Image (tube, rainbow, N blue to C red):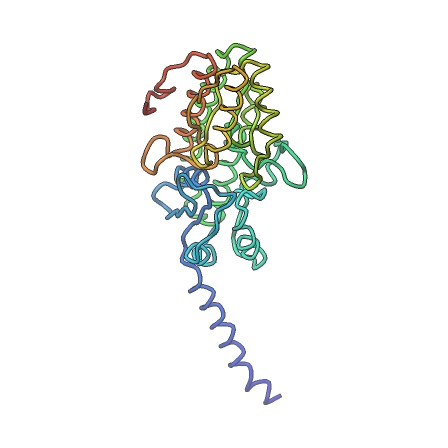
Length: 315
């Protein structure tokens, strides 16, 4: 029995040291993987939390290879929000590792009530933010996890969420109005990769992507030739490039259509997997979607103000 009494102080000292190490390993920050998640989190948190985003403007999350500094931030953060559904690609194993260790982490695109995922069940389309009504549910989920992470500011987060949801509702109304002005036979959206399926489903637009849902998949000659034939037959006037995807395949489609006597113009650059420049209106989720809605509508024959529904878009 004496040996047990002798060991007890050392045992409790070991537990105390372990807890101190765990506390020291967490810096209390909130980490997000992509700009769309970061922006919503900041809108809800306000100045109450530090939110650090890892994958910035113009960077494709599908193929992003995490830096050591990013790995360290994920491991040390107090809370991590990521998209999930394989969007983060090469960062996936690091995120899984954190989850397996039981540290606070949340995949915002997974497990949303009432949301039907598009695509192969084994690899669903991860671009849920293209449907504003779905992203409003994501905002609610983020607020819930922020409140669990910091219960003392629950009322603050709830109030900010309510105000943000009103803005999202106004954006949703604008999207429905804008896309409704496009002639029915011209509601066909062709883009660099298949990131707009949720937008198409939500707003009644047929969507075609040159590449698949991941930019890691290359577009083959048959894919390009089939799309050229489709453009010519449907007399589609415009095709869109994306801010985070190389234009090579888009140019190949335009040249192929020209060889068949059909001129296709670039209708504009859309934000798909990344938002606009930090600090700009297009560098917010609402600004990004306002830009996409306005650009698509005007290029496909619809009629909306070129400066968007808040008059903040740059030309």
